[in-house]
Length: 210
Image (cartoon, rainbow, N blue to C red; front, top):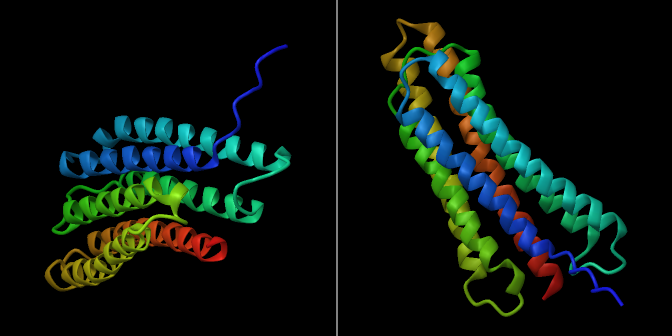
């Protein structure tokens, strides 16, 4: 009799999704801190897309299994919702790198490296929370780890206000640059928002299952 196939571990796959998001966030920090010109972003875009494709593979595996598994550890709708939210984080981070190339940016303004690092901190905090997610019924620190993600999102809200105002007050003689980077910063803020949305979903799942 053949070996029974290993049961699909959704929590393990969620962790893989966050690991991919962390890798994408690391690449964003590298691209922003090492910026020279927009054309030099092409290799970063290629790498970002390769990372994003790996994230898609994990997401597809989750969706395929949740459609056929007879029993799932949490509700199917919650599995799908969380998987999609984690996938969105990866997409949004890739979009920041693409937007810098698409808008042909020539400089990295004040606040951009700080924002990239803040996104990385938020994704990293989500990773720590996800590491405790499979044992949320017993964990004494899961709620605090989720709050850490929200704290980084609130920091991002304050930072986006600061950096966009700085653009429109100190760089007002270059309205196109102010406009372009305002849009890039708004995309960066969406990354932090997406992390919080995923953390909120994890918290909701915990509340429904304790």
